[in-house]
Image (cartoon, rainbow, N blue to C red; front, side):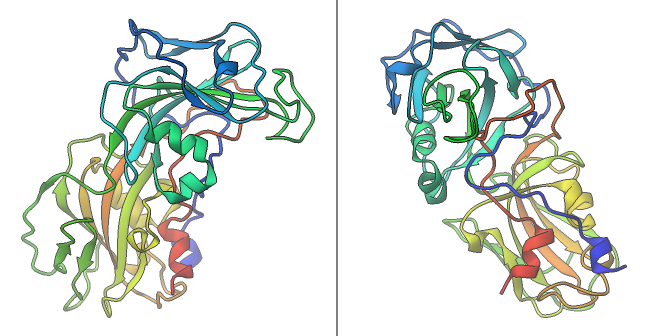
Length: 359
């Protein structure tokens, strides 16, 4: 099998926020306990007072209902806390799980949402802070459970009507976020005893959790091997899910690292039907919170041609921390032009593309 046949096109996501036409979906969530809390003292960023008309309630089925009682006249990127959270704090290096409602700023109509479908993973690091400080502070300065409105004026400079291209992309953009949860950026599942002596040993850094993979010995296995190293108790990964992970990959032939999200300094994310087959097969059915070793034979990796620093017919060894999973997007009626500020996982590369760029 050729390398082009064995690898798939990757799904890129930038550290600045880009919104899909329909927000990504996951398993149905339980009803959110969001009612009965008084609004906090006005705080946020930018023109906080301009977002006073915005409020949100959440139905028993988890669906958001947004009201815009008046006109939003902010001329700068602004946020306002609608409801304080009473859950865990969110710190740099954490992954915030965020539910999003994209809202028509004139009518308050919710045009897309993932409240009823799942949540997106947003990694809090310097790249996010530099790319969108308002967004970074919105997450870092609030707790799980908080609701925050977020407004980006278009070229109209604060009008809720549609506008010609310019500003932040034409029309004004309004979103309301719910911080659903927070999760660490390394696997936290229960350690699993490994009895297969043919697999390379793995040691973990006590502080960061970064794995070190010993040089493999002997002949590589002919078939895909999937060995849990930690067993999580989170959501089960589906075949086409968008997953957020930490991972490291080495070559069986010499044990040299060819790719690592740990080396890049941030978790990465991609869709499982757009990576090498060994990842699609090996990750499907695993649980969030798990750490898994994948030993991928060449026919399920980069085949007879190889790619970049990976030579022909190379068997690859990966250690993967599964941090979050999100089911494929479910299409719904949305405007032809989507806002450009929905949260997404930090990474921009998957195993199928970054291996060829490694040094």
